[in-house]
Length: 600
Image (cartoon, rainbow, N blue to C red; front, side):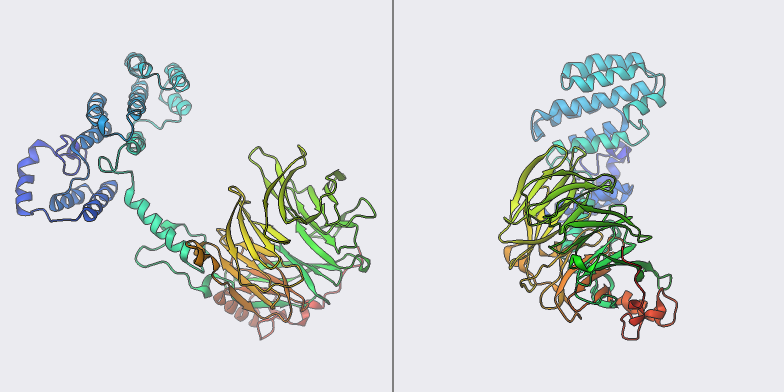
């Protein structure tokens, strides 16, 4: 390949003089094909790809038959000189390419990078005097970056190649650094002169990602390079998206208002008007693999005087469960999820109304609030620590900041989403919604916020850019709270309850495009007999969705293929909880027969 690059004749990367006659004869035998500009570009991109794969002869044959050089002769000579370590030749070729640069000011940057590579290679080979001459005669006169120059000058004191590579982060002349140098400078040239590196690979990756973004049921963690190029990408809903009810959990005696999977996906917590919080254990079956099932673990009572469970929040380490009671309640309760032990009961003032909460990343601190103007920072160790007065809170979430601190996101009764920092006591408004905010849910990567807005659907906000990415419609509104959830391996799915007793599921990526496409209707899951107030995606089993309803049940939804396999496994006793699984695909009454522990 390097021999083909030597003289810059304009075929692959230039050809040797000894082969000129043979190649001329081949060109006469294979006259150039008349190609359109688009086809000539395709030939160049394919030829580059073949060259990157090491198929130099195939690339040369393509170029000869098409009569289309991959790049100009000067660019080919420049590439050849860099790969061969002919730095004087590289500088001469760069001089002839100077007028072809996007910007004239880029010349000094390229010259600096060439001299830097030359300097490092001389140090690696032990030629310290020659390296010092490059430092003084090539790098210093460019006056490009005093910091970079100071760092490079310090490397001359290295005792050997190993120390040089360790301190500089440079992998050596034999470590692909020359090719990496070429890749870094190609950005300064128009593609008509030098193709951007790995152009075909980039185009293929973009094509696959575009198909994935339009796939309504894409729910896999496979990267684009793991998906086939032989056919357009399309996921089957039965294999990827929750669509079939695999279990009905009927242990509650009244309306169920909230359901939340733990961050590790091992537990599911549910609560409602019957004044109990139930912790369920999520188990993955060995046969078939990956088909999760849910069984009862603990029943935790909050006391009938509190009016029911309004909200449940898991600590980030999935160890603690926090419960907020109904609007009249003045305290919150924290349990150990594994044992059911009551860790903390917090009550600050008799007039408090604490109906929502969110944990901070340390799994010790949390924030609680309500719509009567009470907003507190608390900890399991100490209790109430700080207060923000007169903040009427509807919903809470937390996210890490770039400086290492934690911001609290609070939706208030003025339809605002505001950011609070309890460490600095600073606050600001991020954005304002179109109507009253009912609830909100943050994605696992803390970049997206799903906000349920009364009579307006679910709005998906980008927290980094503070823009509304999607307005998701199709659910039925009413007077009661609805909770949404973001899920899937790439956080591409949004689910929400609805007043028409159905679960709505959207794929946010497939709705990119013009305004009309942003109002695609969701998939709807039917089965509940009453309002669906809350849904929750399992963060570990990405095809698993839970929904809580006023019909006193919690339903577990799986992709059709997993649900059928799980039912078959439970029927023959090979799956977890098989004895409690009825023939209609729902949990039998044995799930609700566990006796709750004494009042906590």
